[in-house]
Length: 248
Ligand code: 13P
Image 1 (tube, protein in one colour):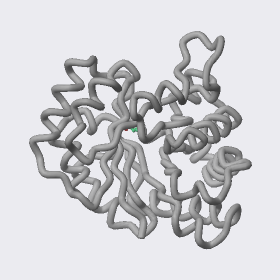
Image 2 (tube, helix red, strand yellow; image 1 turned 90 degrees about the vertical axis):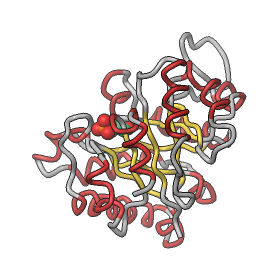
Image 3 (cartoon, protein in one colour; image 1 turned 180 degrees about the vertical axis):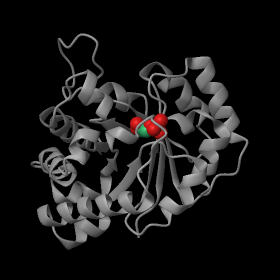
């Protein structure tokens, strides 16, 4: 059985005060204990958010990291630094990082290896652009991203990895993939993991959908067989909406 995972990606939003306020609001609600809830916050909020979620089951995530432990990499954050702050998850290869900060399949792979070596669970983002979908290349693109991200990743790590299928055209646009389309692509990603590793890994890997997920679309989405969760941007910034997603 795969545990459902709903993760909020706050992106570059919320200073420390706003973060604490949001966490305190979320804490007023009863959260479904069978669903893993994660908040992926800006680096500067990590320490305070960690303290604020201390007595809850909410897990903490970062939104990026460098693969090296230390060195001359101005402006970067290392896995050791994240580990020291008690981070459980790290989002890697988000399309915004691929698009604006030259993240490549190769750097995603290096970061995934490093995260796993430091016991930080990676949430690996893949997804096609509108142009790629319209030219019928979406499967080819996503398969290639998955194969490259998982190069030399040991099968025993599969249970520590989450994949997020986020079609770029659905992110922050209000256009969401239909639950059936999300289910199809996630099934295809699962097959790809099966081709690389085998049957057991195919069954065990957790795969989320991301892209304009909102409270009114979550139950249909989570009702689909292949979908194990959601990676949520905008709706994770509102306590009531985020709680509704966790308690789908
Ligand atoms: P939205 O939910 O705002 O579309 O963002 C999705 C996303 O990019 C999560 O990582």
